[in-house]
Length: 528
Image 1: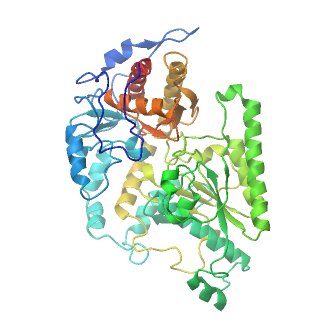
Image 2 (image 1 turned 45 degrees about the vertical axis):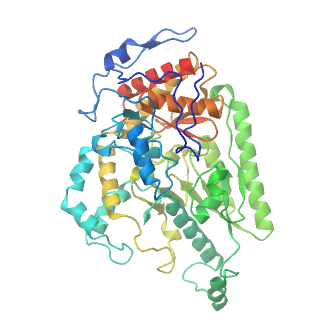
Image 3 (image 1 turned 180 degrees about the horizontal axis):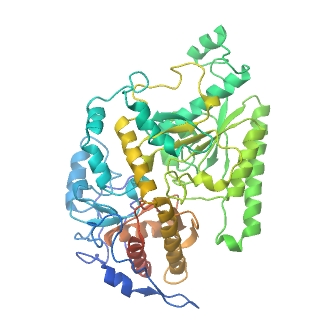
């Protein structure tokens, strides 16, 4: 049975009158643990599998036992009213709901209509340890937090006395191997912009002979006119379907959706195809190996081509998993070969961990899985870290001050939150936890794909990548219908790419939550 549901993914989505489902979700939908335990799923040739027998959440004792939906559509009337008010001064067409964060807790997001949803989208993959975590609430009441909130410093010029202590006991504790330098920024886009600038600085300084070699008078004069040699014709390479932000440099690197880029002038920079692996991986080993080898060959061919025409490739940026573009994966062997190519051609490698970083893949940094012998030159971060910035090595520190610089250079309160989040991850063993729950969730989705989801869950991916999972639907319309019906059944899930559903639960997502998600998905899939 198909439902006439309007897409929740469309960029022009909200203010037209909402269509109702042919069959509204039941009022006060509530899946109890007992219902979860009683339900089983079967697939051809397999024995019945019962869900986990976890009695209660480990990490949020006061968390609700399940979702609850009391409106026949989401966004509900209260959300729509508030969005109309916001729309008077800002485009509100991308709103999916208006949230009540005072009533949200743990893995559950509550909206202003009183709907409580299990949130496996987590503010577009940016909530690490749940809504209203006690440790973060305690931090927010501390004198240390209040002082930095009330007296926001220009960190590059007037850092607070405890700044070294804050960073050393927080962000630097999780610095990627080999990268002991840190530059704090405001968001993921500007983290990538900052890393890109640092790569260009280092590339040109190397061309000048390194060390403290100075700029020429001609360079200093010509850069003010945006001309060579002061503004060199260097390029950065990216991959098609990649997303690196919406500022000018990062948007030129972004190749995920046309709506992000249309009407904006862009740098003429090269992009190559990211491997599009075939699934299940075990059934396509030879094909996928060839796909990745061809992609590496194209990378090197493009580098040689652009260098030959006098437009040297100074940097290459890549996501460990292409997230916004459709959750595309590649093997560790692909990334090791990519690193070899960048080293061979003296190109700086920027690994964009804005979405993959901070433990969601079963490693603190997703690139740890690659087994590199030489680390990346830059690793950028934001989202789950709350703070943003990039790690790098001493060799890529600019030789003069004020080159990578801005007034705020990050948000100190967010960096305090990052420290608290890191402590929770380490103290509660959340990396190992995510890995375990991810295996459980993947197994459940795999079973669904062979039963009620056959032909509806396609290209399931993310095995052994923690809870960083995704699958395709048969069409964009089917994906959008699935996402909307999951909301009406009490689960907030997101889409990406053309027809992909991506799961981005928080690090405190447990098997008890996976049961609720899988039960709900099973019901929705039956009616798609």
